[in-house]
Length: 72
Image (cartoon, rainbow, N blue to C red; front, side, top):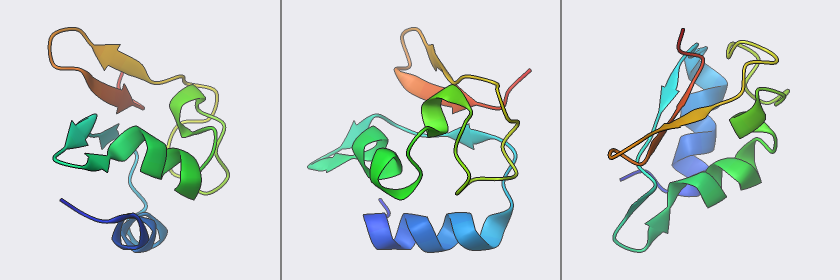
C-alpha cells in the first residue's frame, strides 16, 4: 500500500533484484507509479533500478495479474 514517493525511497535503498507487485489496490495503480519512478522497469531497462537484471523484460503471471521482473 505504498504511495509513489515511498516506493521511490524503498527502491533507492533496497538493491532489489526481483520485483513483484500488484497491478492495483484501491485507487493505487502500481505499474503507473513504477513508470513514473523508473521508466522502462517492465522491459528491464531502467537505470533507476540497477539491481534488476538488465535486458530481462518483466512478465505478468496469468491469473495473478502481477508483474514479475528479474525472475528466472
